[in-house]
Image (cartoon, rainbow, N blue to C red; front, top):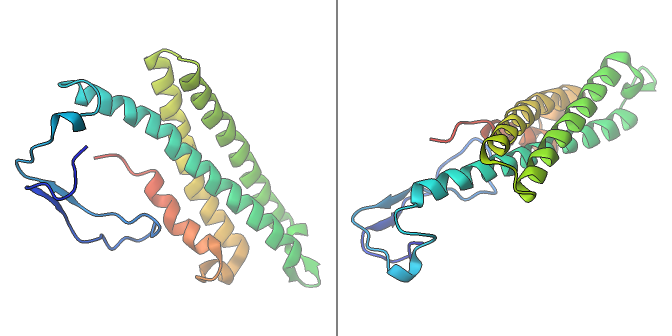
Length: 183
């Protein structure tokens, strides 16, 4: 861990991002930074191996974030479809909207199974290759489904889905970053 204030360590200005405004993200620059021995995490020379292990676990965490986004889209869309009326009936009784909500439910159920299965493998000490595969599948499915779920929720909300006062607009922006590759 690099203590702040070390010579050669710089924190750049905050990025102006499309979404994820709750995450205050800055570039970090390390130029000939000396780190005290007692600040090392893990064994010297094993940083890359440790990084890969953390990255694999991070895939499950990102998949869990995506699952939360899908569930929020499902819950908000279901509630909105009960309240919003069109031609005297709730829009949720219209087949097109009902099918979209059913699709959100399927995405949430499938993502839940994949995320929890991968997390259970990690908790129970599954082999690295088996866990890595499960984590990658969970992340891929859940993040792609989150992007789709936000698009569907925005569609169900109609014009309101594009307005900042409705959370689906934020979900729409935030979901995209979940599926970006790590550089």
